[in-house]
Image (cartoon, rainbow, N blue to C red; front, side, top):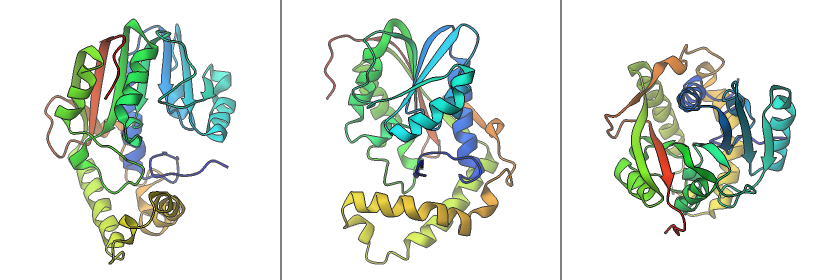
Amino acid sequence: MVKLLGERPVEGTTPDSLLALHAAGYRELKSRLGPGLVLDAGCGLGFESASLLGDERVVVGFDYDLETARVAGGKFARLGLRVTCCDAVATCFRSGGFDFVCSSHLIEHFDRPALHAAELARVLSDTGTVLILTPNRPADFENPFHLHLYEPAEFEEMLRGLFDDVWVGGLDGSERVKSDFAARRQRAEKVLRLDVFKLRRRIPHKWYTTIYSAALPIVYRLMAAGDSGGATGITADDFHVTEELDDTTLVLFAVCRSPKRNHAPD
C-alpha cells in the first residue's frame, strides 16, 4: 500500500490548489523539454512524470519507495514511462546520460540538499538542462518532511557551485490561489495551537513524521473536504512563472545548464 505523505500529491485527497501547483510545475517543466532522454527524480505515483512524455522523448522516473515505484511503473508502462527505485543522492544511472533532468518538490527533503543537486548535475549531459522546483522558504508552512528550504539568493548560490549557467525564477499563483493557501494555513494554525507544549518539536523527528502522515488524511477529510475533488475550481491555469520574487512567491524554479565536473558539493 502506498502511503500518503505530506508532500505526495494524491488525486481526490490532496487539496485542489496543491494538485494544481504540481500540475502547473510539470506543465512548465514539459514546456522546456525537447527530444531526448528525460529523468524525473522522485516520480511518486507517476501521473506527473507521464505528462512529460512526448514525441522523440523517453522519460525515466524513479522513487525511493519500492512500492510507489512499482505502482507507477505498472500504471504507466503502456504509455512508455520507465520507472525504477533508487536514492536521489546516489542514483543508479551513469554519468552524463540524460538530456534533461527534472526534480520537482524533492530537494527540500534532504538535510544536505546540495548532494541531490550534485547528483542531478552528474547524470546530466554536458549540453543538457536541469529543471528544479522547490518551495520558497518564507511561503512554506509546517511540513516535517521539508528538512531544508531555500530563499532565492541561497538557492542560486548553491546551484552556481554546480552549474555555469543558472536562472532562478518563481512559480506563483493568482489571488484566488493565495487566498486558498492563506485559508488553509489559518486552519492548520488552529490545529497546531492544540500542541500547547510544542511536543512536535521535542519528540524524535521520526515520530513526528509518522504521526503527521497518519493524521493528514483525517485532517483533510474533516477540515478540508471542500478543498479537493475539483470543488474549488483551482487549476494549473491559476499559476504562472515569474521573475519578480518576494516572500509570498510560492515556489522557486531553477533552470541550470553546463554542469561543472569534478566539483564536490558542500
